[in-house]
Structure formats: C-alpha cells, structure tokens
Length: 488
Image (cartoon, rainbow, N blue to C red; front, top):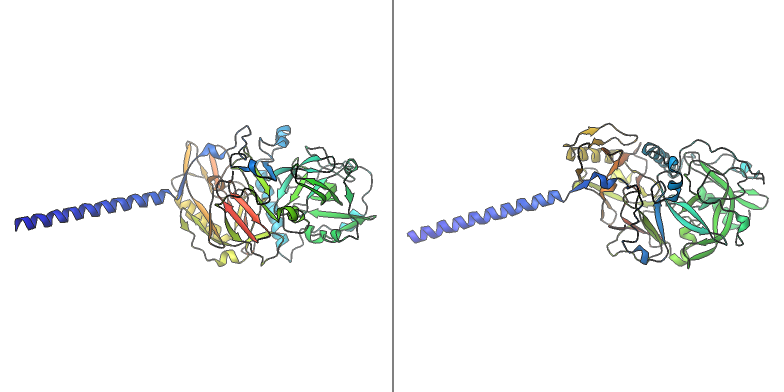
C-alpha cells in the first residue's frame, strides 16, 4: 500500500513538473512572439552618412542586365548635391513639397477636378519663338524634392541625363536648348537637339501627338508643323516644349531608336538640379510601354534605407528574387496610376480594428514619388492610437510639419519600435523596414512616417519611405505588383 502511495505521489510530482515545464515553455514562446513584433533600432542607423556607401551591388543587381543605379538626388551619392550643397532642401521643405504632390495626385484621380490643367495651352505654345529668354525661376514647391534619380543616355552621340524616376507620371521630358522661353539651372549640360544626328520632331497631325492628351492631361498644341506638349503639376511648376524622337540608351546593349519624349523649351519650378523626369506610368507614351518589346512591361526597383546609399532600377525580369510575392493591380479606377488593394494594416502584430470598406472607399495606389504614405483618416487614427500605446515609455515631442506623432529620444542611442505591416490583395503581407516607420527630424527627434488624408474619398498612397529596402516588382503585362524583402 505504501509502495502504491509512493508511486502515486511520484507520478503527481512528475506531472506537476511537466506542467510547469510547458507553462514556462509557453511563456518563453509568448515572450519571443512579443519580441518578434518589435524592432530594436540604433537611431544613428536611420541617419545618412556624410559619404556615399554604394549598396546596390551587394544584392546581386550587378549581375542583372538593364540595371540603372538609383540615387537620392539630395544625398552624398548625388553629384547634383555635391556640387550644390546649399540647394539641399530642409526636411520641412521636402514634406511641404510632398503635400503639394499629393494634392496634385488627388486632383488627377478625382474626375470632377481640373487642378492639373494648363490654361490656354495652345495660345502659349503656338508662340514659341527662337529667342532665348532667361527668365527667373518662379517660386513654387517642387514635384521632386524628395525623390530618386537615375541616369540615362539620349541622342547620338549619347548625352547623359539625370532624371527623376516617377511611377506617377507617363511622359519623359528633359530641358532642351535653345530654351526658347526659360530653363531652370540643372547640373548636366542641357540637351541640345541640334547636336544629335538621330533627333527629329513629331508632327502635329501624327497619332503620337494625339496621345499626349491622356499622358499629360492637356491637349497638345502646334508650332508650325511641330507637336507641342504641356504638362503642369499641382504646385504650378511645368514643362512646355516640342514633342520629339531620339535614341534612348539604357545600357551599352539596350538602345531604343525613336523614343518619344518632351524636349522642354519652357520649364519652371524647383526640380532640383535634375534634367527632367522619367515617366514609368502605364500610358502608351511611358518608357514602360515604349520599351515593351524588349522588357515586356516589367521593371523593378529598390530604394535604399538612407540617402547615403544607392539602390537600383531594373528594366526587364532579370534577377528577380524568388521571395517576391505578388498582389494584383486594381483596374477599377483607371490605368493612369498603379492601383492596389490595401486589405489591412498591423502595428506591433495587432491588426488595426478597421473595416475593409475604409480602404475600399477611395482605393489605393503605390507611388515612387510620394515620400510619406497617406492613409484614410480612420485608418490613420487607429494606427496612431496603437503606435502611441506601444511607444508609451518614450517622451513625446511636438508635431513637425505634416507629421503629428513625434518623440524626443535625446539620451537614447537605441529605440524599440513596434513593427508595421501591410496586407494587400491576395493575402500578400509586407513588413516594413524600420527606416519605413520613422522619420528622423534631427539626432534626437523622430516622427511616425505616416499622414492622414484630408477626406475619406482621397486615395491612399503607399509612398517611397515605406518602400525602402523592398524589392518592388511591377509586372504591368501580368497585371500584378510584387514585394520582396532585402532588395538593397
């Protein structure tokens, strides 16, 4: 009987130990799960270095064909910035410019808005003459102050031009001599058509000329027999000039004759020191469509985590990582922008308590030119509430420009921040890099890198800060967008 009692006690003790073991193991797993929903970040890692550190070759992009280096136009990797350090805009200016761009996008998407139309386009363009006029640059907020640039070749012999690359625009344009009306100051020598043996103008009665209406939002003009384009942005900066053809050189082996572009004779606005803009939209006049025979409307890019590093823009399918997951483009709202379906957002592993209709009301787009992601008001309020709760141990700081959730991290070298992830159509989850969650105002002040739209009917915009370090793949022919981690 004693032996039986002893065996029972021993069994009970072992069971108790076993239960404790699983409880402890379970607790450890829960702790690990909690820790997996946070990033521990050195604040210095979010700041650019004073010297350029090229990273685009470390992820195999050098092995890809048709790859261009992507550089932040105001960082130390940019020759434009090195030669003109006093022209680098402040963060406040960049955020102000960003809001101007967003206003322009919202105006273009809403069919009842005519904000983006140039008044009396024909009367302006018909009077282009051969006199060179050195007019001062009009005060205004730039389309591209916070954007990224690539270098392409144009003409015969090839002239290298640094252009803002923009998925929210279709027409590629550059400033051209003789600058009949006005040209702003750029770093590269201004392209001169008279020195290119492969240059030609597009005639007014051509089919290509008529395509300008959809690509620019403005009806083309006519100067004698030459087609004239006009494109204006929401900040009132603009480019007007001759619609032209010339040889485009992407790499030594990828050359495209008769590439259609705008040869700007009247260009005003603060476009930095760039030579113009490279349009990566979906219109037939975009570079994506014009090079479709070779690249099949397929391109990808990676934006670096800071402006002192480099990324890449690759045309074609070469070298795409296997970890890329695709979400279908949404075509319900037209084909000008790259519309995507945002299904949900999670902060610190917690899905925000918002209905899917919040994102469906106006839809969403991905845009390489918008700096800060815009969310529907209800979605942003929910995100901010959870983020603040999970960041409660850090002292707050006043709002900065359009950013209203800021922290004073003086005295901290590292910070623990909640993860943020987006789920897109097709159940594609994308975890943001820490550099896509916080914006550093200065060495001790950081802000949540999201902004609420002004109205629920405004389209959500997945901006370039949130795209940092991701491999973003546009399979335009296949109707889908891919995301992969560790792109650069």
